[in-house]
Image 1 (cartoon, helix red, strand yellow):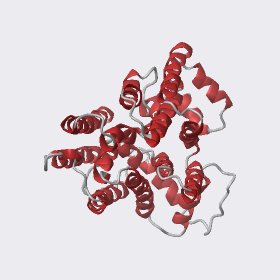
Image 2 (cartoon, rainbow, N blue to C red):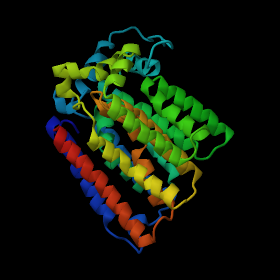
Image 3 (cartoon, one colour):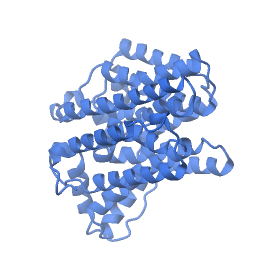
Image 4 (cartoon, rainbow, N blue to C red):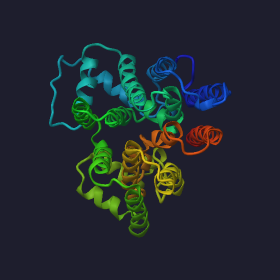
Length: 380
């Protein structure tokens, strides 16, 4: 696909394609319109077709030095360096991101092309989300997948922060398996979280937020209080927390992100620093809906409570370090759950009368698209 679409137009092609998909999905069919339930078979078939398109789309990207391709050239170049290595390259479990590095190096040493490797990465990234969606939203698999694939970070993690994208998709699948708590799922949850950690160590923040939501912070009011306190602390203390984290971390990437403000070249590539009111307001939308559903309306749903509180707690950690450069990388540790936290009340609960709930669902989905389009134009 990259042979036919220029690097500059790749993101715009994605946006135009999603616009077409949303227009088709928004055409009312029957009385329930957008929220008309589908059988698991029908929903899964449509979702897998769309997922296959995205896997091919991400895997066949242009291998270009263009900034519009993000980290593509760097990943491809490093991949080629391992092509002459002696197979197998041993696993070093003490190494950070050891599982990622093991697969990355050995696929190259075995002679697989960089497109093959991008295909594997894209397949894991997309299909883990599909599997998790199927567990949580069996009657609305396709619509829930549209909420995620319309989310602006879906493209970013598929094209740029691919290691982060793979790790957080595996963590989401682990959290989704907890939807049906039973012994075998507990084992799978633990295994998947361990794999996610060995792909991108930063996901421990999302994992800790999930564990805190399961065992400690079970009320949304408590989680929102933590989030509001985090905002106050961040406004009062400013970037000193980011500087402190730089002084104690042994993660070179994290140190570069936190200190990027002093490096003009990095600032050209990374998002601007400062208190990101735009991102904060964006992050607050599903929190506001969650407060309305769980506190104002007192609608009980144990899993939604866990999912919502996980998102709020992980987002509070990002708020603490909101002054850090490349702040979206930290935000993604909570934003990986954003589409699911947002669409859960619309797809799984009876919060409003059906015509109103259908309208709100459509508005939220188009809001996601509008923000994605805004970010695409802004960053290109």
